[in-house]
Amino acid sequence: MKSKASAPGKVILFGEHFVVYGIKAILCAINKRITVTAEKVEGNKISIKSNIGNLELDSNKLISEINSPLKPFYYLADKMIRNQNTGIDIKVESDIPLGVGLGSSSACCVAGAAAISRLFKETTKEEILEMAIEAEKTIFKDTSGADCTVCTYGGIMEYDKKKGFIKIESKPNFHLVIANSNIEHSTNSIVAKVREFKEKNEEEFSRLCDNESKLVEDVLELLKIDNIKKLGEKITENQKYLETIGVSNNKLRDMIQVGQKTSFGAKITGAGGGGCIFALTDMSNLDQTMNEFQSNNYDCFSVKIDFKGLDTF
Ligand code: MEV
Image 1 (cartoon, rainbow, N blue to C red):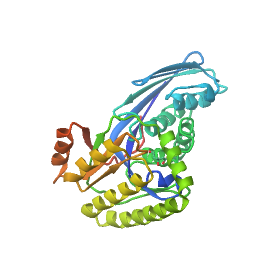
Image 2: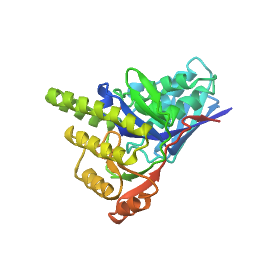
Image 3: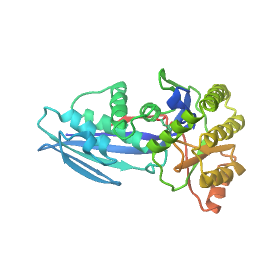
Image 4: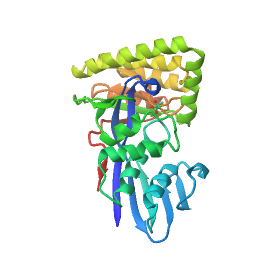
């Protein structure tokens, strides 16, 4: 018996890092996906094959002893086959660039939780999200849960760590041009770096949280009236806060400047320190913005909002 699920990647439009400290963020799912196929097999081995490598282990191992980015899949499979006489083969296929802030690990956790759990029972989206966040915590213990939530439900949403998410009903028709710095980053260590900044600069951090919170409320209004130009200005303003907390660098700043020439606004998305930036465009400046990045030798591609979220087959 086989079970298959796919989940989209994501872009954090506003509020990364601040969301870890209880400020609302705005995220959208993007039309690039990860697909996970899970199958029960004889024996008690858990085997995972993906384009970032393979992992094959007996069940019942201590999670803390596994050193692999594929650990969340092992965690999910091991949990499901406890007291069951079966092994599991897992295959992961991705069209989301990995480890660059576009939600590849969250999409893996969501599609993995769905494909693996559905080998054993019917599961709801709520249950899948809960399992996915637990699995994500094996590689990123401080996760706010924002990424897994948008990868599960799709669309565009506001997210609050304590209160959960509210879907944003308007369906903005923008295109995001994503440019990749090709600098690897670790979400864990950048989140730790921001914590250090906060501890050393409590007052400033608290002021930045207030500013971010106000900005997010303004953005929610702008989304209602579909004002893309003003939205772009807010993106540029949000980037200033990310600069202040130290998650930017020279290359990201250069890319953002290139993006800002023709788009409505550009900023880091996700943890920063490397990974990707995005520029907000519509059909009037999409090609021009892509050309700007390309003529400055930056890898880029465009995405739209994915309204489907988790899909199971
Ligand atoms: C990472 O994509 C987003 C962060 O805000 C961390 C989190 O929300 O868990 C940096």
